[in-house]
Image (tube, rainbow over all chains, first blue to last red; front, side, top):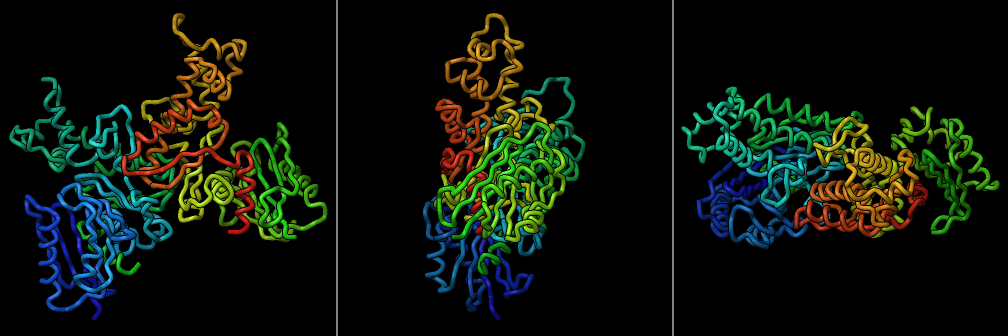
Length: 316
Length: 316
């Protein structure tokens, strides 16, 4: 019995699972939320306890790791986490190899999830694909010629920060109209809040959205915007359609530039419903040249994509 | 003595050259303009005469071909030419292999020029680069992991048709604010013409540009816009800066998405001078994330990039 151990340092949650080589079902699976004041040490400590609980005295043949932040995949060193303090330049691969004495592969979550979908999910049989996650942030990972393409400095895939509307609102990165600024969950909530705070009295829409948060606009989330849109709220629809438009322009531009076979989309925002997908598909098709073929499909592995990708990472 | 024959079907001109394997200087070189009413047959006839004049009874070991239009590189079939009639589905590789009895490689000019710069020019030693030509159109070619990346359907590289300003003017492709719509030579000329035709009497600028065409605005070209800008014409500068801005946003977006080491820029518009390059470099740097490193450099091979790329194509 050859075991693979897969780890997912997700920023707000930690997950670990083991699987027999060749199997498509987890043998055992553990998951914890990061504590409120997590740092790299507490994350590592919790993960260690998950691992020992999973292994039950057995030894894996290899360990694959998905990390939610920039990673130097060639050395397996975490550069930093945007969510958890203390992760600057942590040699995660070496730490784990020292402790468990087996080969370890580490890469960032978008690259790993792309690999997971390629090997086990919506990208099976597709040699070129771009995986996009639309959640708290918007990121992506490439598979080209059947292998991850990470870029010269490991920074490829940042579709969240390509500009689609230079006259749009200012993003955290300092530019205007990035895909992430229009399509991420928190920014969708912010966009809805700003309209609601300044809405003229006679304007229609927003009532359902207001109702969902009992008029406390601080409680708005991207998911609530999606729910209100699904329930027919015009203002929520406007915000959601703008997000789908931004993603559609981004995807159409990427299709023209790289011509991959498939786009595989995951993350909370992509669960917003049929309406969101229709706008997205239409705008992407309009943005791409007529000769450029592609498909846009949802993820198959869902939240487990990074863990399955971590499994795939051990056999590259 | 092993000879390589390189051919360039350029749309408005035809060029052919032969070189000894390993040499970096053409042994012989021939070039002709396409006749005004060229079609595929006349282009092929002229190219044939160039070839026999070059070969002087010798036989090349292989033939590489750059074609100015979409090509199925796997079969060496030309799909069409946007400039010359009759090129629909012409099996150029097979025609040449039948006639000359040696291996032939065919690819489109942007991919071939990218390969030429990679092997012999500004891309030597760089495993990942994006070549961009800014001329009558705006196109590009990829080198990733040291090899051409053509896309799943051979359509990769179309930076000319990524949208950088959704509120911008309408492009021939039907979309608004494509890079090509703002940065190609003919569109720069059109943009200048439209401003001059509607310029309010008191507005400054445009005098030098008008002078260059003796007030006949139909004679405006992208090159004249560049010349007037270099001579200090404010209106021409505005048009040229908008072109540089569009290219800069495009390049910054591509850097975020693919993270190549280098961008190599050629074509007439990129000879517009220091001012153009400064705007381009600044906007690209501002558009890319701070962690994404890249360089933007001019081509080294100039108009010969497709021919040198055709040589490289024979040894892939």
